[in-house]
Length: 98
Image (cartoon, rainbow, N blue to C red):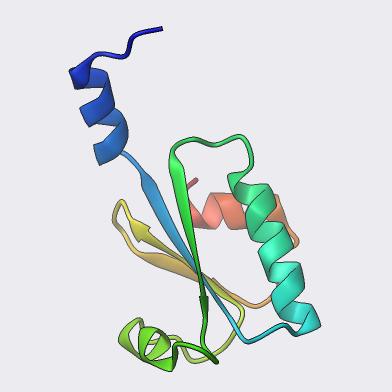
């Protein structure tokens, strides 16, 4: 299957970008990774970056993250975030407009 340049451009400009901020390998961090993975499973239009604030505290500060786990939708606007447990996937999807 050949994908035209217009379709490739559309796909690349309509990517949903998420950042998951976690703290080390704690149980809560592991569960947040698991739930975030379920959110993006089977979605080619979502890019998920996982940031460990223990290893990269500057990234958390730059994004004004005060608690972990925090899942932030950075693109497309508006930027929105969910702090805490992510297990209610339907509510998380609705809030982040996924």
